[in-house]
Amino acid sequence: MSASPATASQPQPGFVEFVVLIASMMAMGALGIDAMLPALPAIGHDLHVQVENHQQWIVAFYFAGMGVGQLAMGVLSDWLGRKRVLLTGIVLYVILGLIAAVVNDFALLIFIRLIQGCSASTSTVVTRSIVRDLYVGPRMAQVMSMSYVVFLLVPIMAPSLGQVILLFAPWRAIFAFMSLFGAVVGLWAWLRLPETHTAEKRRRPDVAHLKRVAYFVTTEPSSLVYTLGIAVLVGALLAYVSLMPQMFRDVFRSPGMMAPVFAICAGTMAVASMINATLVERIGLKRISHSALTAFICVTVIHLLWAATGHETLISFVILQSLTMGFQSLTTSNFSAIAMEKVGHVAGTAASLQGFTTTVGGAIISAMIGQGWTGHIMLLPLGACICGVIAYGLVFVGEKGKMYRNSGPADPSQVFQVHD
Image (cartoon, rainbow, N blue to C red; front, side, top):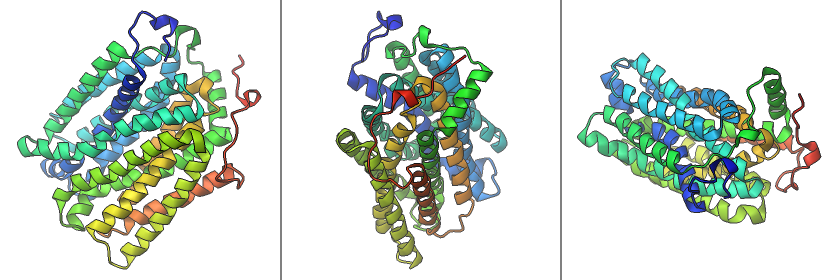
């Protein structure tokens, strides 16, 4: 990774440090979700939440905030530079976590979580823009997959971490830990992360320009269909995350098993990302992702039928859900790279629009699934299966039926150019 003129005097991180730093910043957003899972019942009890399914809002509103925030953060990073916007978001994330640790009203907590999600959006949209500034195509997918492996240490460890914190402190300490983690990552980024969007490339927001860019990003076929495909798959994943406390209490009667099962399932996503990083440049983005999506649908159908017959056990759940999440990881990581292939020249704005769609869309879909919870495990594979079929239909239409084969590099003559 070469230094830009604006940052030539700043020590540059090596490739491994860069990947770990990007993953750590991405993990901030995940920590705000996964570490909270063991605490949802305690929060609901302490803040007098009357409807149990409303506890899911602690996750859903945070996730929705991450989506809403991405609309602005990517555009601002195109104007002000990646690093400045990223660090501002991290500072707000830290402050809001400390505020959330002391509130006593559920509605106020939900509002703070929404705003904290907005600030955490910089850790996704801006980091994605940084990677796109430096890499493209299969190489970008490889970097994102490697980052994803490190990033997944958080969802693997966070629920267990949350449970450990609850053994010695109230749920408020989890928010304090989130702030501490954000402060450490923010200091690391401030000291080591270079500015990848130099001054000569920056552009002050202009309504007419943004309309043209937004029109291109939302109508360019690969950007549109793969972004929508990610949104529905993220909805299935977030529904699983939100429902875990209730599933392990109501179905498996083993709340203490939630953290290790969550770690096992997240571990398959890490393995899938490692496989993807190894194979993507040789096999190709579309061939891997289309095949993985097909396998995702098949596994969810098997899981649905198995649950419908009443044979679901904790062991069968771990096996089938792990496979589901592994194939989901192979699909979405490559979908993300495909969606960005032809919009790299407006990476910040494109990442904002795509991130808003996938995050808010995923939050809405997961809420629709989660609010249907009545105590039967069938809801989870049914929702995932429907989401997988919708994603497949979107990509099938976008690719005009030509699935499982790769296209060549983007034709420069077909890439959108900004004209004032």
